Image 1 (cartoon, helix red, strand yellow):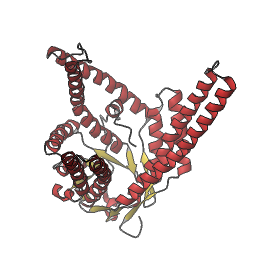
Image 2 (spheres, one colour; image 1 turned 45 degrees about the vertical axis):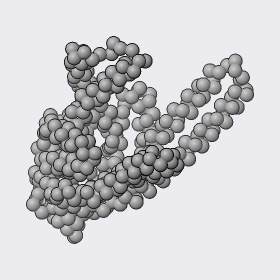
Image 3 (cartoon, one colour; image 1 turned 120 degrees about the vertical axis):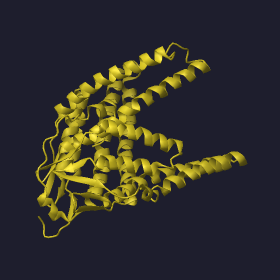
Image 4 (cartoon, one colour; image 1 turned 90 degrees about the horizontal axis):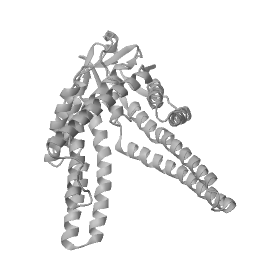
Length: 394
């Protein structure tokens, strides 16, 4: 333990090492037609976890690719049965796909079926969100001590549905209530060893974090109203564009400042507290810089591809297009692999590093009294999150 009672987060990952790993994972995932992604994500997590250090001790990720793969198979079977039951209920209710989508009535029925199916998946999406976090907690260690999380996925799903409906009905006015209560539900069921986390604070305090969301939405609505009333398309288009940009910045601002508030009002055990100081400007800068770098590199690849395509066409003409299409396919695959790896090293990793390096644990001497936690049982291994395609986050 360091002399200071505070522990400041450190991130020791490098772009080169992660880029090489990400390219290898992407290539193996492509070769195995997607099967390797479970093992690939595990390897990337192990790298990021081991690069996260506090007081000289690195985090450890103990999950396995086989766990994720088996969890995915189980989830696919359950989802197939669930969606089959939903379709049967719709059929008996008089809604099925036996209509002509070219007619207005058919198009309306098709849209209704799509939205009903999406709403039917909402409970499982929220369920998967909780289970995915529980799995990552259960497979994370620091200083040899396991994190953990109690069961409660269905309780979270029911609450998430209720709070989401409240947010929609109030046109976003109760978003702070929803995000605070749902995060508190998960935080209060989380552990480090035998010490329990507890979320304090008030949900109304998050309105300050949401101010730019509301301002951006107001600009969009006012622009639409004023533009339509004055029949001014320039005012309408410019105002809506400004509002959407403001909304995008507002989303980042809200997430950053909500994270700061929640961290500052969270405790571990009876003594340990936290602070987090990430900034909206730094996160936006990372995204802008990363996007520009990725766009520049992909632009160069596209230019090379067009030049090669033109040269190949002039050489073989239109009688033998197979080599040309093969070349274009290879270049497309290369661009696809590079874009994923570059997003990881230019956007994801710098963002993670910023949050970690601005995070501090206070009264850290109390960590010495924390005992090991029993191994978690019945952890889902993110099967539903992968099956529903919401498990892409590191």
